[in-house]
Length: 376
Picture 1 (cartoon, rainbow, N blue to C red):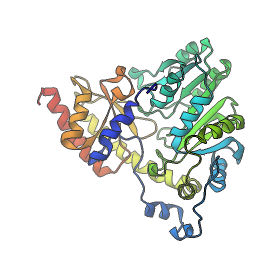
Picture 2: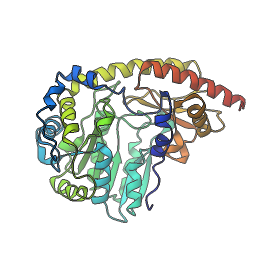
Picture 3: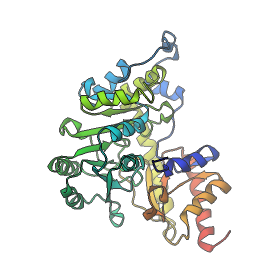
Picture 4: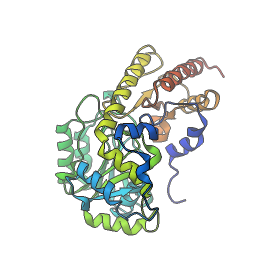
């Protein structure tokens, strides 16, 4: 292939379905259909009259309208329903960029946010978050990097994998930097609705014409199996995206759109329940880490359900993660999946059930102690 292997997805393909405890994923606790029904107040009998016909290229009218009401002030012309945010990322990166364009990407980052651009022949410039300041965003550095006139700046806050976020004032400064550079600003909103230390930041699509935003029901909603996401972009770009997806997926299943529309119409209730659950798990994670200062170091996240944990003194974190999965059936994602600079880190997800987090942390502590002693 001309595109680099997606290291995170490769790791998940190897281990996600072969473990008993997941403390590596980046989403909240998965909902059952019964739980979704209880939260949204619908009956499965409402599907009885549905005809299994094609949906529309830009998304079914009901779901598209629900998403537009939530994110674009009701303007459906700026919104497309996609197969998760991953399809939106693929379409945008292939259509909004040309070979030779410079793309500035927050670092570390979900590989799809820069790997597709690199495969297109773009120059990828990393904007590193500061690990010694809790992975804080260095906007002065971004301003300096943007002096080169990039075609695109790509960010996601709250951030995956660190959980770091920015303030409303910092968001305004970030948008100003993109505007001064006349750059497209890609705002990955996957974790945007799930915050702990401040109110969620809305995607700046309403006040910066050069902003493209992605979202998904996989992360804050607990509905990854629906594979439903969305993209807000200028209508001209969406029209080109529809032409390209004619060769890929055509449209999203109307059955999935039915459940997604229910979730979007009742999003506040769903996200509030998931936030409360995740906040409790975060307290558990912090207490666990506080008891292991010689083995574990991390900055508590401001949003999302992942922490980027450093393991000082561990000889090989990737090997530790493999042993954890293969011997103890616990999923943890090595930081190397986000780049070689992060080989001493791992992404630790705390959005799942409290029982699996408790079991997973106990087994992780066991592996860390064994590896620190050099046990085999």
